[in-house]
Length: 443
Image 1 (cartoon, rainbow, N blue to C red):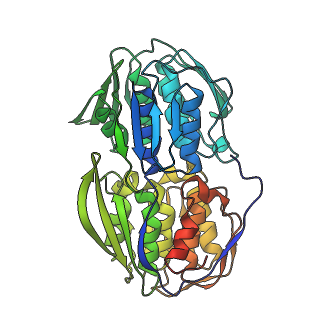
Image 2 (tube, rainbow, N blue to C red; image 1 turned 45 degrees about the horizontal axis):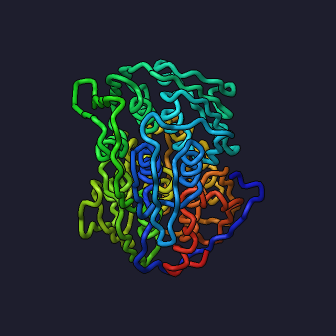
Image 3 (spheres, helix red, strand yellow; image 1 turned 90 degrees about the vertical axis):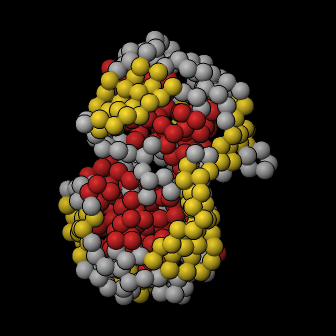
């Protein structure tokens, strides 16, 4: 799943962006729908699954552990699960490609099964720390052999029965929370995660939807999430909403390209994921929510965005958990605002697919944007709506969000911007450049 041959791509400014588009299915929900369907007893069906490389890595891993997963010609995925406790030991290493979500969540699943699994990944994933997941899963009894620094390649030796724990998250991480809850699925008794700062709640919603006995209660310590183990999951029919992280690129593009008018259909509006919309509206973005509705337990709406003058803001740190993946493209929006936008409290960006603070500071800086890098964020001084200079070749560092964010920046640059490697975009948004052309830009 690595990309040994870089695919450079040059992107030029767009005259205007107009049209109605759909974005791929939500990546977080896609991962979880495959995992939980594979643990249910019976047949589940998933529509709108994101068919990017990260999610396909999850599908391959669940097949390797015994689930029957087939994509039909109509695009619906049909999964016959093995039941909680029924995972089989994979015969070969599980290749997670670039997907940190797959890796961390599957480590949780394996931890409470009596099987051993080895996880490998591409160069980018192999640099990402897994210690934050290893620590609580070790408390539950799983054993790990990892590369120094808690990195891949990594072997997990699960245990059954595992030990239920009560664990307070030291950092706001939906991946760590989900790994513990998934381990708790096959652990006798009650496993509890205390979340001082709320993160995306797709795992809780979907576990409850599949029939797990799960409670979420507020407390002075934060959200207390408890799952009772060894339940039988019931198969589901799931419709995956459009990914708000993918929609974010078009929300920023529509805001910064003069004359733009773009409608994005069927976008997931889970409040734990919509920080980017709130931040852009604070900057003056013209974003209208249309036809708000509930689909499969998740709030959904169509979003219309039109070009608007943006003003710099100080991004509220409390928005960070609900927009952690969208910071790179928010920095792009800031590059076109009037004034200096300051974002702090986002040190988590340094341990994503790349160090996204450094990566975006370098990429925007190479294109003539004034940036100041902090340990936990960045300050970006905007052009007041004028085009940025551009004219640079930027390093994407095997990171899909850096590649897509700098593509959006190029849509209002005086000179073309070249990505040193556009291939990583396929991990989450295989039709990204096709969508760009559909809107009238030639990338």
